Image 1 (cartoon, rainbow, N blue to C red):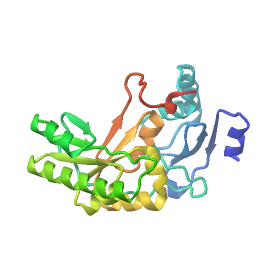
Image 2 (cartoon, rainbow, N blue to C red):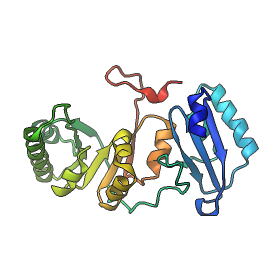
Image 3 (cartoon, rainbow, N blue to C red):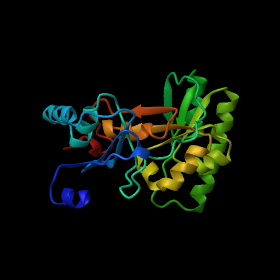
Length: 240
């Protein structure tokens, strides 16, 4: 029903349906940007929350962000299962990354060597899958990740692999970074498998609602941004 209402032009639908197994405060949120159960540890004064939500909307926040900013403390937003009203199961505790320090992002083992030689000790190896990826590209990806992990080990550095978490785990990586579209694509079973892998997890977030959703996976860190407008990537999360 909430999805149908939003399809008819309603900006946001909120369904208050407390259940004992979901904790004292759970509200279903359905907006253009986000959908899922808002789960908090403490009960909520609904009237005060609605007033705060209206104030956040008046301040210019999109409905999903406004709903979450109106809570007395930052809640968790689950990954959008309307059928399963329970929050996501508590993930296994990830390995904790060392302090990140200056965090470089590179696209090859050669570039990784350069930044580590320059004194950086935390880097992300980000090799995006092209639309025409074939078996040859898969082999090249494996070689780059294997070489990158060897380079990082030789420099006693912390290497975080972007996206390719199954291959990263197979090759002995300790940390991965995934965007939220990738995490959604994994589905509930894939996210559970990732959480149980023991890999330290970094998660991208570009809005308050993505931040609340990322918290449910107990990541080692959450990347927040962009801070300033960007011309290199479409950022739909912040649009009304």
